[in-house]
Every structure is written in C-alpha cells, then in structure tokens.
Amino acid sequence: MLKRKSAEDEINLSQVNSDENKNKVFLGAVQEANEGVLASLMKGYTKLQIEDPIRAFHENDLQKIVNNVDYGVLEVLQGTWVSYNSDKDRKMIGSGIHTTIMPSPGTNAGTIPGKYSFDCQEYIEKLTFDLVPGGVRNRGGANEQFCGAVKYDQSIKSVTTVEGQDALQYTPIHEETGMYLWLSDVFNYAATEKTISEDRGIHPVSPLNPNKDLYKSGYQDETLFLIVNDLGQKEYVTQENLNGRKYYEIIAAKELKVGAGQTGQYFIPDYSISRSGVIPHGSTITLLGDLVRNNADEVEDDKKFLFIGPPPFPEGDAAWKYDHLSISRTMGGAGASESDPINLDAPPPAWVFENLNDVNDRGENKIYTQRILADPLYPYSVRPDLRLRDSNKDSNIINYVFIQMSSKNKTGAQGGILNIPFVNRFVPTVEMNTNMWIETVVEDGKEILQLQYEQIIFFEFDFGDDGGTTSWPHIQVNTLRKIEDVSDDQRRLIEEQFFSAKKNASASGCPYHKE
Image 1: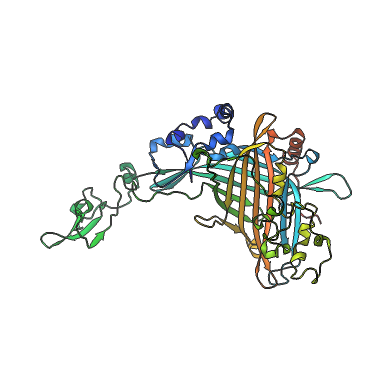
Image 2: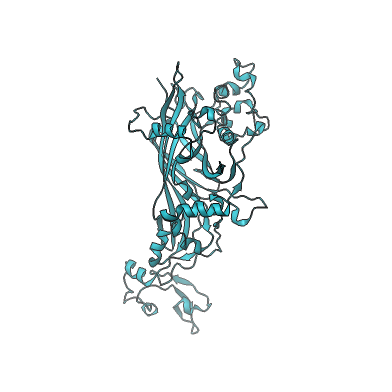
C-alpha cells in the first residue's frame, strides 16, 4: 500500500478536492515547477511499512477525513477518455486492437479438441471515470480504512470495412461498468468509553462469580491468571498483579477496556489499487495491483513511482514474449519459442502462407496458429501491445506511472473471477491481467495526459490431443486521451458513435459476428 508522505498532506488536501482550486493545484502550480502533473502528484507517496506511524481515528475527525479523501494517482483519471489515433492518415480508424479466441461451432468439451475461432479487429472506445465524493469507509473494529473510489463506464465498438464499399461500420462489442479503489488511509480506532457503553451488549459480572471483586468496573473486562500465592494457595490475579509469577490457567476477558485495540497487528494492505467490474457476457472481476516501483539508482526516493521518458516496448526478436502474445505456449507456440523467436517487426515467415501438412508441419504446431500470423492486422494480431508502441513513436512522452493488476497474484491477497453457468461450462474465464500506463505528453507546448492499457484475459476450453488443458488469450489494447485533447475529427466521431440519442440495436459480442 502507498501512503501520503505525511499526515499534514492528508489534512491539507481539501483544496485539491474543490472545483475552484483543482486546476490550480494540478496544472498551474505544477507547470510553474516545470515537472508535470504526475511528477508533482507522486512526490507525495511512500510505501507503508509496519514501523510507520498509524493515525488514531476519532469520531470528531470524520468529516475532515471525508473532505480529504485520497484517490492517489486515480485522481487524474477523472473525466471522459476516448480513442486517440496518432496516425493522421488513419484518424477515423480504431486505435484499439482486440484479439478473441472462441470455441469453434460444433465443438464441445470432450469432443474434437482444440478447434477455435479467431478474430482480430480494431476498435474505438469511450471510457469515463467519475470520482465518488467522500470516499468509502471500511470499518474493521480496531482497524479502519478509507478508500478513494472511482467509478468507470466503458463502451467499445469495433471498426470494420463494409464489404464492397469504402464506408466503415462501427459495431458494439463490449460494455463494462465498475469501480477502482485507491486502498489507503489506514487508521487505528481504539475502544472508548462511548463505544464500549453503546456497543456493550453483555451482562455485568454475576454476583455468583467467585472472582467478582477483581472486576473493578463491574464487567468482565480483565484477563485473570491462576497462580499459587506465597501461602501455597491457588488464586486468580489480574495482569496488573501478576508481577512475572508463573501462571497455570487463564480466564479471558469478555469485555473491552478503554484503549483496547491500541496494540497488536495493524492492517497493512499488500496492494494499493483494486478494480471491480461487471461484464455483460456473464463475468464479474476483482483485480488487485499496485504502482510499479522505479528501482533505478539515480531516482530520488520521492519519485520512485515515476518513470522518466516513454514506456519501453520491445523491437524485433525481443517482442516474442508469451505473456503478451495472443498465442500461448499451450497452443504450440507457432513452432517458435522465446529462445528461437519469430521477429514480429519483419514480414511473417513463409510457412504462414503455405499449405501445411504433416511433412512441413510436424506436430501440428504451425497450422494451429497459422491464421493468427496471416491476419491482415499482423503483427498486432500476434502481439497487440505493439500498437501501443507504434502509437507513441511520434509522441513526446516525458514521464509515466505504471500500474499492474491481476485476478491471480503470485503472492498475497487474491482477486478473482465469477462466471454465470453458461460461461463457466463452455468458456471458463480463469485469469485476467491488466497493465496501465498514465503518461504525460508534451504537445505544442502543452502538457496533456494519455492513458494506455493492455488487458489479457485467459479462457480455458477443450484440450489438446494429449488431453492437456489449453489456455486461450483474449487481449485488448488501446491508447486514450481525454475528449478535449483529441482532434476535432476524432471528437466528432466519438460524439456521433457514443453520445448520439439513437440506440444501436446490435447485439454486444466479443467480438460481434455478422450472419
């Protein structure tokens, strides 16, 4: 978990949340420092450690806390983001790329294995973020956590050419709503006279209790220890009178004392961000993640979560990394490997356009993935995030924050995916990983923000010839800017497709198929 650098930062952030000062804080003051919005914001955060002070919670501070809710880097997402295409010759074409693998018609688990339908399309998108005022209070007794909540609403349309025409067709393929949480602001809330009195729900000490005189308050709010006293007699004493003597039994306290909960383990979340989403195909997701730390030696401690320059993306042979490919190892890997890769910045290998058989494709590895490499959107059909790389080639990106999230983390707290029975039966969705880059771009002397993401969802359906489970990647990538920061042509397209009063009756598929 990341925390604001000092309690004073938390107390004095009310001006950030006011409409009057928001632009001044995040734009004017930042530009005077010539650092950019992200650099200024991330200076205020450090990693929470167990030895760091934890603030006490008091009821009379509640409104102050609510007024100063922390949204972390999610604060800059507020607003409407839309597809941004840096290619002026393709400004009306989708900036996003999605690849989708689905079971082939006629197949079922346990029948002919490994047959799949593959589709790769460009898409346009509208993604809206809205800060939830006041934050969210999670109450856990001695632990309290206030989260900054950000609602999101995503709409995506594929972009295809109408057969026999120059016109483009925009078809709904994905809708999603959900919420991001900035998991911060941990407090200690110890028991007080008021909370004990209001929440007691327990009887006073029974007059028949042989130890009743040890409970000065009239309630069993002391732990008692059985000892042998100097006279050789057994008796119970309180912690205060134990004085290091050997004890044989304990009678636990049944009631709280003022200050209870001040000692012991504090809750330290091992992730800073969560994402909950609802996808209309029948899945709900919970992802957990964090900002990636910049461990370069020359980076100052208060800028460890800020990277200078553009995000690095691979070139040539280095791009063949299965974590980002639409071809998994369990699909045969197109007969290649990370040590013997296919160069995705070169034309596809000759075998991609050959008639394959058991002589030139022993093991059936190539024919299994041939259509993916032969797709018109190659190399993006194989590694979609290369579109993010290519979109940045003419952009002056001065810094960025990098967020990684997953439904299935290697260690620590876990997210998860729940599916409706149909999805769970035929195309179980088992894992989802997301990379997000929030970037500062300088364009025409002006600083603007850019959002890029790569989202990889893994399906499991059918199996290989040997009965092994096959993992099928479904990938989405896109480059977005706020609607006020795209060209007039691109803004008009988005308004026409997503803000029109007319409702498109087309079914939402992933992807949508014309019959």
